[in-house]
Length: 396
Image (cartoon, rainbow, N blue to C red; front, side, top):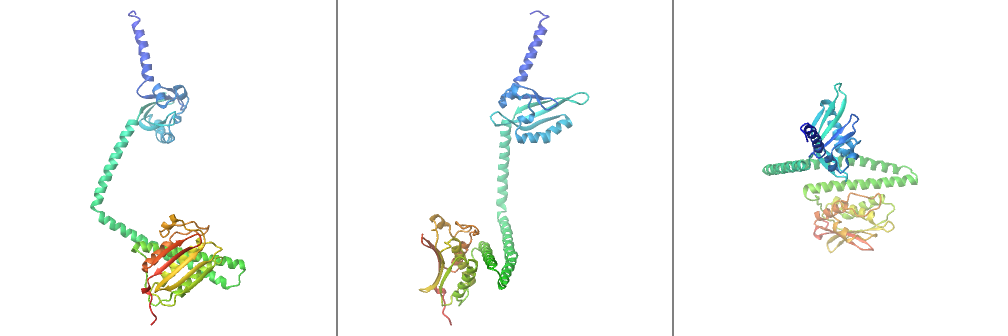
């Protein structure tokens, strides 16, 4: 090599070195024309995303980004490029050939003619996997520290906070009860009164059947409201309250409940056998509600072609009331949860309830120092309420 040849050889080496530096740089490069299409990229970027450089050419930047990153870029940084001609350190995700996400940081720069027309846009891209992981760990550590600090602060004033929450919950429950008791009962009473008035006028058989169904629906709705109110009050005061009376005859109470249910279940026979001659110390409204829940449950789950039996007696100084129906046997799994709130077994269409009826009935039995049990076989399912005989009183 002569002295005259040295600069030329050195220049060729410099060009090759710069080309190698571009293709195998520790960062990715790509250039886009005025039409937004990629016309140049390096091997580093192609290797990262697993797509040959030739296949990248002609694509738009959005073709290389995930959906979220594409939207983020177009709405935030593409306008920024137009306004100021560059952006730095934008966090986006590239799509790899196998469908994975590659976290990267991108910086962009526009090159324009003197007249302002766009020549090309160049992006420099750095991997951000480790940076993202580090930032995530910092965020998690900070969140954990904040949680610990918050827990420490909470422990100092936990008693006051709990009392405040309890007062707020109590007020909310009271408002809930008031809404149900007033805003729901009043229109329901109007509907019930309207159907009764219509039944007093001459009606077609079809109209009578429809009005009968409406009365049955009103009765079911009233029962649902009672159950929800009692459940709310029971949770609020740790049990259902009863107003124990003296010398109350239960037979008229039970007969009234049966008569009301017969109206709404005209296609289902109810056979009653009530013989409780002595007055009983109890809450007659609650006993009637319990009986209504049990009979309603039997009508819902029992075989339609078989009657529901209601029996009441004074046996060995103990009040015994049972309700029985034919139909499918209750499974052992269902028996374990039968008296729990919001449990519902299989019911016929149009007969779904809240799953509170048997729970309320059980709570009423407990409030009377009594028991409510169930026996179920292929032949019969029977719910039995027993109340201590000491609550029976002699007539004066």
